[in-house]
Image 1 (cartoon, rainbow, N blue to C red):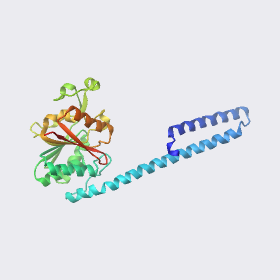
Image 2: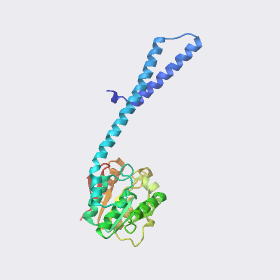
Image 3: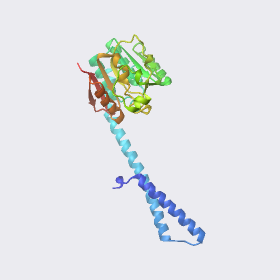
Image 4: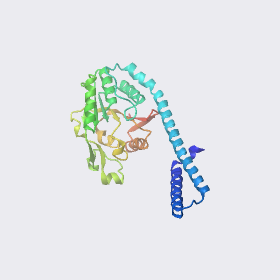
Length: 292
């Protein structure tokens, strides 16, 4: 029953009770005698109950969040062990989950790399996935992973991590600041929204891509941040479509988020040569493949 009560309603009741007590206290001071002592007592009781309820709600929310996090953590143990069984890491990995990729997403990525054996992997957003891909390409004996990152400091840290794991020959991080693209800047066209026509779209600066880069076999979309714009990851395919190989695979993280899932749905509608499969991972993921 108490869980159905809204904290906002309790806060309004709390504020009204405080205002009532202040007015009553002012009246008693002005007339130098107590008014409605029963109402004062009731108001104080309401005030205390409201405070206790807010504390209760905070405890319940924290408990539910912690239980969800703990359950999710247990579910990530098996894919994490799978990664360590399949890859002989030379150094400890950076922290996983939260803003970084989750073990189940990395396990799916591992399976895709093993199955399709890409020569060129491009990541929108660098991090632990860049390390994993570099290890996988080292194991298969050919290929290289390239990762965009709009933050120079983080791009540098990712490149240093590749060096620490002795993987500099298998991976490279591009510092690619975010820039605004006008509609005419895109090599392919789709049905633009009014906002896109007026303001354009923001994504990584693709000028960092070398002209001699071979076609992309695996594109992993895990950036830029969702705060960049609505459907922050949508420009990935319009900007890179002409650089994808005929059998390219696209892997997208965070697809439980409404904006990212709608981005993939819009891709599938705008670019019908792709089909998508949703994977029920911790954060949700889509795998897109080009139709044969």
